[in-house]
Image (tube, rainbow, N blue to C red; front, side):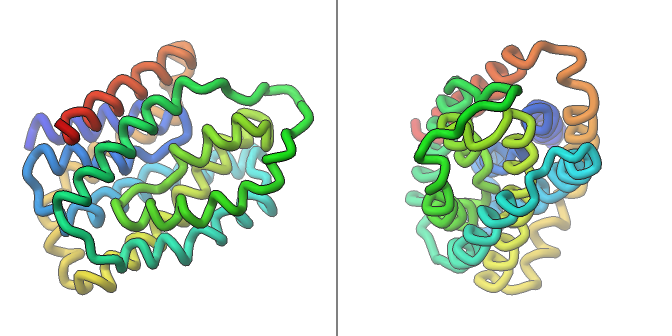
Length: 244
């Protein structure tokens, strides 16, 4: 449990520093620790919610959330995240999809970012709502927030400035994690919530502390590119372990 707790702390620290929750990596770490895969998304989504709630509040207070557009994407995805959480899935399929998602997400962190200054959005930026639905379903299915896939698409299309995209991803993860968790509980039964989180209290405390430190201090201590590379390296390594 000690190494797993440390892994959750490091994941929350790194992911929160770039505006994400870390749900995909929490799931992978739990899978590698041979945690019951049916309860895995419950723990991961609960950790996601704890990490991104603080980030979303800070982004909102700083006036960085483009509320109308961010809520549109999130509310398109949320019903499908609930359906994803309801969907039964075999363990082998779950682990394969999760591992593949991690590797792709890690590679996506190397994609170019939108500029901090104002720039003209690409034509494809108008159609991001079409991508939000499938990302929401994937989020609920494997217990992730989906923001780690949404953010690179928003950067590529210059949907908004970099900080506004990070704020949008944080809100997207929060809403989809809540919807996905509701779907998981409807599928497995509310009693599984206590079962899943009963032995995970140290993990929850670790992500709260790591998430707060990541969103408040990590970008001040390390350059942004290094944080992104470390996050990508962790994501790809854990995803590769699952696939192998």
